[in-house]
Amino acid sequence: MIGINAPFDDDPADIIECTAADRVGSRIREIRIARGLSQPELGRMVDLSADRVQQYENGFRKPKMNLIKAFASALGVSTLALIDPVVTNDLGVMYALFEMERTYNIDVDKSDHTYSVIFNNKNRALSGYLDAWYKAYSTYKEEMKSVETEEERKAATTKYNDFKWTFPNSLSDQASKELRKLEIQEKIEELKRELKDLQDDGLA
Image 1 (cartoon, rainbow, N blue to C red):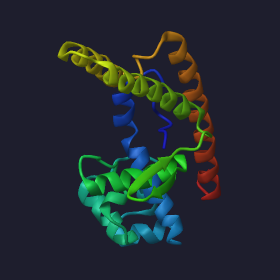
Image 2 (tube, rainbow, N blue to C red; image 1 turned 60 degrees about the horizontal axis):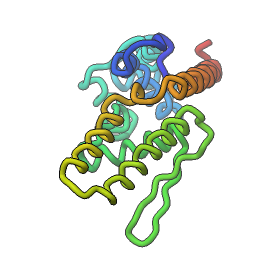
Image 3 (spheres, rainbow, N blue to C red; image 1 turned 60 degrees about the vertical axis):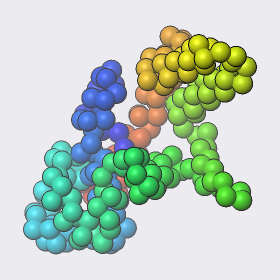
């Protein structure tokens, strides 16, 4: 979910923060529609007007946690289904996977006791990021096989950590520009889909 009010050149952390309401609202709207509820009906269940529900769904207001819990209860879902997943615990990882399934149409495969998450290549920007990560990760693994001293191990680990901790700034200028172009194109397509959803929902 991309927020329509998010400037493209902000720090990624700023974009994540200012689009939090958009993501919560999008999940509320998706589940409400799947439950066959209108905005007035959901509003009555959480003691809000239909206009206020619409504001939350469109990301113009961010509901506080007690209201998110009320929405979750009214919709018959876990509160975790409405908020951004946090991957520092097992449940958070599961909801992160659900979110990636929803947003990126991932597939999950199992072989013996190993699970694999498979991304399709329809999202060109994400594919570019994954490719850059895979190259850096593979290089790091190869370097770790040949290190002979503790200093070499630390140097290889530091190089890889710097790639991760400064991503996407760690990409070359040309690669970064190409990925940024693809990212903007993806955002435009997503905004078009959001507009269509709003039109289909009778809000435009």
